[in-house]
Length: 86
Image (cartoon, rainbow, N blue to C red; front, top):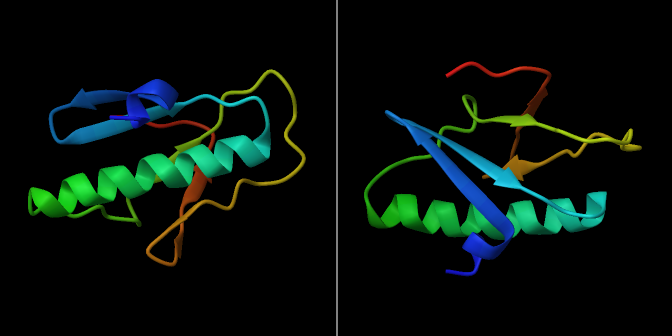
């Protein structure tokens, strides 16, 4: 699957983390949307749901990105956080 070339999946119990790398903010948003579309289809095929209110975005960067990423799923803005716990 193409998403394996641009992301890594980390799973623990019923939690999943996606690690997506990019060289620019635009590329990151494009890759995120691509990967999330594939994950959404995988969830649908397995009768699972992605809960946008529990889905968080955590950025790791060596440079200050100029804007918030404003990533969305199913018309819901995903919350950008400083830390996550799972």
